[in-house]
Image (cartoon, rainbow, N blue to C red; front, side):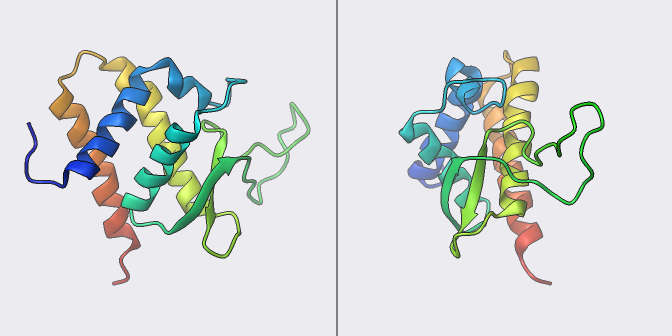
Length: 142
């Protein structure tokens, strides 16, 4: 049991891990027609915030980059290709960096956690913490 961190932080990470195990995560994925519950969107918001971003909100939506349209389908693919949610910054604009990070964590949750479903909780908890800490360090100016 991890005792050296704030219980609220542990509860948020625990719920994110539960989401990755749960059918509820499918509501976050692009292939789903069902959105997440309001409380589960709040978990995404809090995880993004813990990673050092300053979100105003997390909402359903796509973020597009400057890439060319996909020749097969004739449209630009969204940057948040795995997760149907995006991060809005404090100014009310799309936060590309935070959305890409969240998309990455959702991808890990869906693929990595699915692959290692039987991994012990502590190992999975540490993996999410590592991604959060790694993000915070990357956001700190040198």
